[in-house]
Image (cartoon, rainbow, N blue to C red; front, side, top):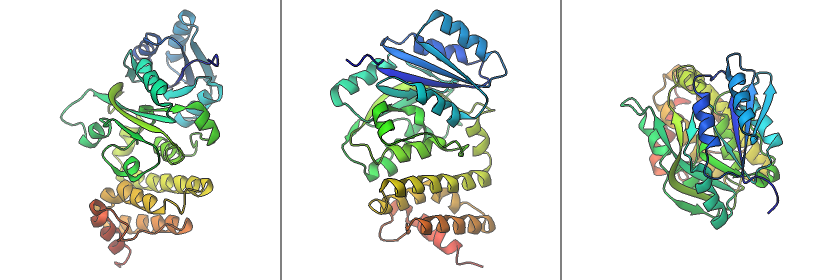
Length: 321
C-alpha cells in the first residue's frame, strides 16, 4: 500500500446551506473509511462555511480550502491540487451519494484497475417533467472498454455530460495534465470528460446507481442555461472549440476526426434543427470555422445514420440566403 487514501472526494461549496448537511452526512458515513473529503468553500456568503467547520471538527478526514469565488471549475481544480487519493471523485454540494458509494467503486478498482469508472445516478425529485434523456444518460449498462470508441461518445451508454458520475485514477489525470477549463462557465464537465476519455486504456461502466442528483434547482447554472437556447448554443460552440484544441494537442486528431465530427452532430444537431434560420446560420457558420481550423469535416458517408437528418439540416442552413 502507498499510504494514500483510496479516494479523494472533492466537493465545491457555494451558498448551499440548505443542502450541505445531507451531502456531508453521505460522505462521512461511507462504509469504506479510507477516504479524504476535500471541501472547497468558493467564497460562500451564507452559513456554508460554518457548517463545513462543524463537520471538520468532528471528522479529521475533512479538509477545507477557503478561496475567493471563482466558479465551479476553479473550485474543483483547487481540490485536485491537494488530492492524495488513488482515485478522485467529484460531488456537488446539493447532491449526495449512497453510503456504499466508495466501497462499490473500490471493488472495481481491485478487479480491473481502471483509469475511469462511469456509474449511474438517481434523480430527485423525479417528476413527470424530468427530461427523459437525463434519466437515460444516468442509467448506464455494465461494460468494459479497453480503448476509446464511438460507444463512449454516441451510444445511450455514453459517459457524459456530468463529471460527478465518473471516478478517475489520480495518476492518470496527472499523466494527461487534465484540469477543468476555468474559462468555460457552462459545460465544463463535457470538456473535461471528452478530454479524459480518449487517452484512457481501461474504462469501466457499471449500472449501479451510486449518486443522487438534485434536478433543476432553480438558481443552478444548468437550470438557467437550459432556458436560454441561444446562449446554450453559443456556449456549445466554445465547448467544441476547447475539446478540439485539446484533441489536436494530444494527437487524437486526425486519428479520431470522424468520431469528433459525429460528436458535434450529436451535441448540436437536434437544437440546430429546431432553430430559427437567422440564428442558426450564424451559429453554423461559426461551427464550420471551428471545424475547419482543426481539419475536421462533416461528411455524409462518415455520419452515423441517426444524425444524417442533422447533417443535411446544417448543410442547407449555410446555403440559404
